[in-house]
Amino acid sequence: MNAEQLKERFPKLLSRIDEEIDELRYLTVIDPNEPDWEIDDEFDVFDPQDYNYLIYLTERLQNAIGKELLEELPDLIEKEKIFANFIASEEDLYGAWSDSDEEGVALALLDLIESRLS
Figure 1 (tube, rainbow, N blue to C red):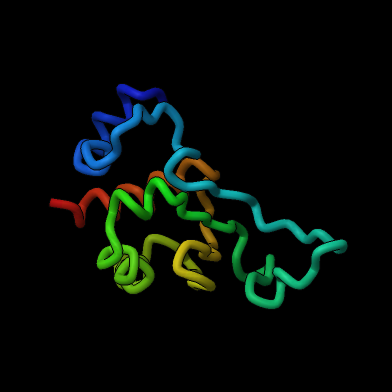
Figure 2: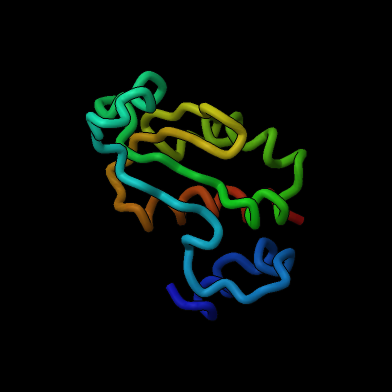
């Protein structure tokens, strides 16, 4: 997605950010959860059989949505069932199972956030 498409899809969210956002990765980083046997301690929380994506909320996104929504977000994600499996490990780090690709995961999350902003 380019900057115009992002502004069109997420007007409330992007109005809260001063700089121009032209890629989803400036808001949230979605990584496939694949085993790395050199760093296997991450999989204590995020078993790749249960969570095929790791979701990182950028500091830019956290600042834009505010502390209240950031704290409510895990409960909203579970309530809305936007992912088949979901776990919040930290305030800004989640595990999720989705049949979508990385962009689809990011868009589902950001759509939920956009719907909660005024």
